[in-house]
Amino acid sequence: MKLNYRKLGSGSPLFVLHGVFGSSDNWQTLGKEFAEHFTVYLIDQRNHGNSSHSGEMNYEVMASDLQELMDGEGLQTISILGHSMGGKTAMNFAVTYPDRVEKLIVVDIAPIYYPPHHQQIFEGFHSIDLQRIESRKEADQQMAEKVKEFGVRQFILKNLTRNDDNQFAWKINLEAIEQNIETLGRGLTDGQTFNKKTLFIGGSKSDYIQQKDHQTILKHFPQATIEMVGDAGHWVHAEKPEELKALVVEFLQQ
Image (cartoon, rainbow, N blue to C red; front, side, top):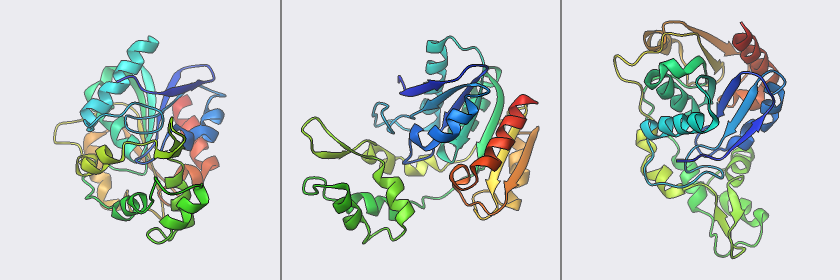
């Protein structure tokens, strides 16, 4: 699948991958800063942003999408940064195509199984009557009954767009994501390893990377360094952008 992406800056190539329900827009601000040092590819993964939709959604095909993008751009090797679901895609790409990855950065996710835990967000999506709303404000009001957190609603509503008939529609392929959410939670399997420099960045207030996960991380990524950013939750790049930027740039320039 040909993915939608934006290309910024110059230097060695860096692919940046968003999490589930997100898009390349989530990394636009940091992407511009990374572009002072690297050629940055801000990528919409399949079924997200402006990339194509498909009922097939698993980490094998999502890693293959990246290989297709690399080949189309004439890139032999890249460094890759992924957050949450994007981190899982990045890990799977690295263990599948290790010769094509220089360095790997994974933000607030581990190579373990996470049971489905997005039910509230799915309920938020389904609470909006796309045929009847006339404004984003109305959409927010409808969703507020299911999703109390304003920031989470704003994140979800970034997926709201207008179709060719000027009616509201979702950019994401909500049906495919919902049908495959169990698959998106799966971890790496025994024997899947990437033996090059790897950086895991977690939020100290997030429970996605816990102390008990460090051993599993090092089993799959023997050269991994694990850094926890203080006073940050799952959205490390939004909550502590300067700290994350410093860690990423230093690691890539070593």
